[in-house]
Length: 324
Length: 271
Image (cartoon, rainbow over the protein chains, first blue to last red):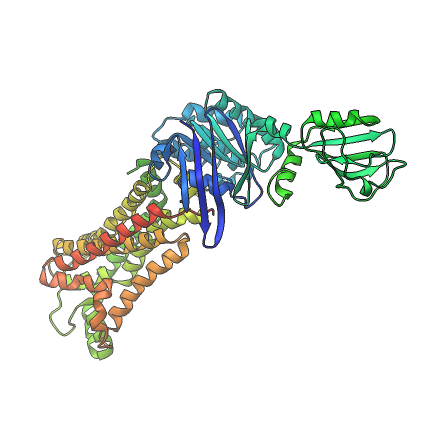
């Protein structure tokens, strides 16, 4: 049974549509990153999954059950950390956790002790005296202490220092190693890249990508820098979007159009420039690039894998929402 | 019902409840002392002014020119402004604490993602203000009881005569708490929920106050909660006001249920 399955989900507030027919699911035992800029609909999706708000249409199931009709039973299998952690200020950290454990009718004392030690949190202070980071640690302990089958974390490390962040990552890896599942919403692309198996990218209430991170990188663009012994060829392949042409001598790149070489179809996407070095983005199979290069007098080639930041910007800057 | 939610909500309300209950008992003791020492003079004073007499008679249900027993004078404490103010402060605060307060503070996110159904949370927290309703309804009886032990009484004071007003007050408290819980469920902010609940009780008081002066009010006085709470009449006749209590309980049941449905279905926004 899939931990989360969403089908044709829509959510509107009056005329403002926050989610537009989104569908996704993932399998058990995955650490899934949930990416999107502010207002993309990540938190709305999470709140629908938890039964805090209702969808306008579509279905959201957790472990195969509808969250609105089986909410309380399902929530016993879920650990949740909201993006903005609000807790009872008059309670100590320990009393707060005991309250949540008692409400779940569970004895979580040993796990609370262990997690408080791992996250270096003093539980005997009142919540009102906690810093934002300490409240986030307390929220994390609350989400993890009952060893849930599904963890839904809304930007869980935004207020944590790098050392504690690594401790959190380590705990989350343990969760996944146990065969449990984590949905991890974040703005920090590096941490999603470091931590997650899979990523779902949301933009303007639409899923623009769901893919394993490795596959996503392979499918997406490469940064390429090609230095030719002679001026940049008149014709560049369609797959190559040249952002600039530099170097000593060249003909105008604006004129380079029409006849490709090898399997690559040619075009001329660059602004007028002169030189023998072309810097740009390659989207397509590497074989095609190598074929094309083999027909030219190439002095040097640098091909770089994009980091997730490049992907993120590519997804969010394009009009269509697809990778550029 | 969830015991942990009940204990937490009860703990949050306990200090306010303790202070208000203690304050109310103390006030009633002082009120009894004042009535013992100045009750007759007060009635004579009131009888001199038609305007005040009308207010007094409509507000407390006592004919100042008739025979007024000490038991009836003591029953006035049930409808005294101080008693209402203390009672309703506790009830409205407690009844809106979770339904609107937790949403406004942002703590509802944690509470409502626990494996507890919303009806269970609503019931657990309602039980707290219902217990508070009972405690606060008994306080005037306790105050009168203590006062009769402290002060010398010229005539016999039978505590049992105040049981019916206390039960009637309990019904009134349930109605007020249910109205507050209902508005709390419909609102995501505590201020407006408290405001509407206070407006309902203030309107009741105003209707009661204006009834002797504006004839039209008598046609709509059934809308006033206080129309169903006449403790001095109860003490005078010794009859239980079953009809009034049923009206108050019916109102409480309807508004409490409406609040339960609204709370179960409402979208919880981010704080």
